[in-house]
Image (cartoon, rainbow, N blue to C red; front, side):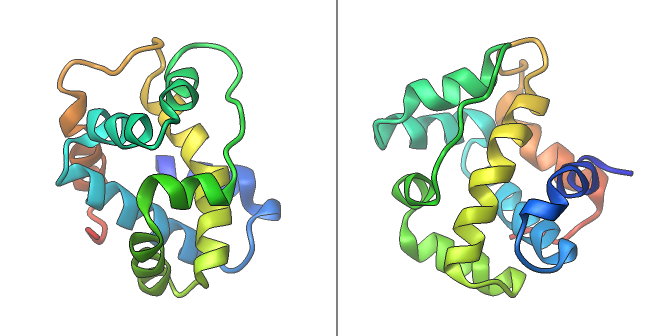
Length: 136
């Protein structure tokens, strides 16, 4: 079972819709970030949106504070959320809510030592490669 399966499985009851749609959504997000700086690029987007401390808390060890669907939209933009939602067969609202639940855990799992691993800009691409999945 891969990381995406594990994440979706753990959060399954709280996610709206089909589990495969949420996996597609995560693969789309990972593909998007693989081509724009990986985890470091994602961190930069959060900082630009004024939410740098939030993603820093997910990277650090300790509890992961929640993020709202509105904050996810603030970071990624409504156009990108709509695009990712369409690819996954979800409504933009469901995609934002799903990402709000999945992203903190994904970032946390990708940074088990409390920091972005060396070569972390390439981490999303590496995960996608091991998945053999669709790239968004």
